[in-house]
Amino acid sequence: MSETIFMKIIRREIPARIVYEDDDVLAFHDIAPQAPVHVLIIPKTPIATLNELADAQAALVGKLVLTAARLARELGIDESGYRLVTNCNADGGQTVFHIHLHLLGGRPLDWPPG
Ligand code: AMP
Image (cartoon, rainbow, N blue to C red; front, side, top):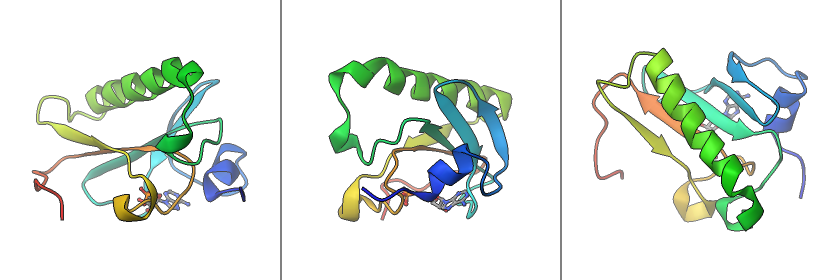
């Protein structure tokens, strides 16, 4: 699998507005925000899609979700509400093949999505 732009962000080879980092997880503002808050939460391990997740990565997935919930609190959208989205492959609208959670909030979000 060819490397994605997210690995370049992890290695600081291209800039990003990083809001959180630890040994396993990086979170940064989306370059094309779809809502007033639009943060991407990614594992530092490159996993192409949800389809490639292994059972052994269950704790990592949990950490991604918990990081998103904490960032929602820190960014002040926990009470107003937010959405966590992970797109998978073509019909899901995935364009970067390194799994990521989209944390979206700060305005009412349409449902169902188009
Ligand atoms: P997806 O379409 O679900 O794969 O989401 C990929 C997301 O990555 C999109 O929302 C893009 O706007 C975002 N994105 C692509 N390149 C960058 C970048 N250099 N910095 C921040 N976000 C990016």
